[in-house]
Length: 119
Image (cartoon, rainbow, N blue to C red; front, side, top):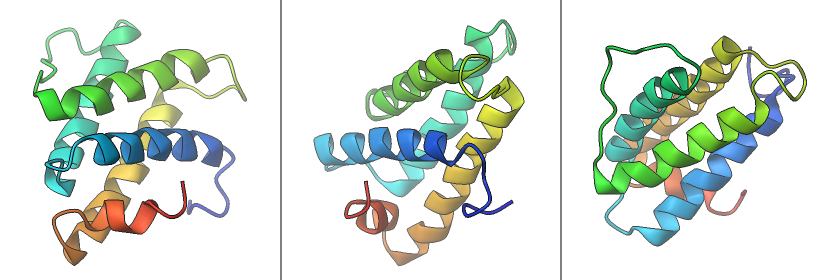
């Protein structure tokens, strides 16, 4: 499933909006740290829904905004809008993470350079 045939593409856009905001606020935020934050966001969202009880979520100051944003979007959307499930939401976070990884080949903030004009 690519971006063009994703029935929950709007969630990807919501997540990206929050990522761009964090990149704008924190010039020290790198793609590597964004990937780290997205991995922790998946854990935090699962915890919010009663799963991943034995996993720990990082409290790194530059990751916190991304983690909090992803949790907020998850709480707002999972089971409420377009019947998205927790698994489908986590899949969207992973999709964004793959995009960050891909664009990080173009510099330490390559993903930000890619999305800043689109969201």
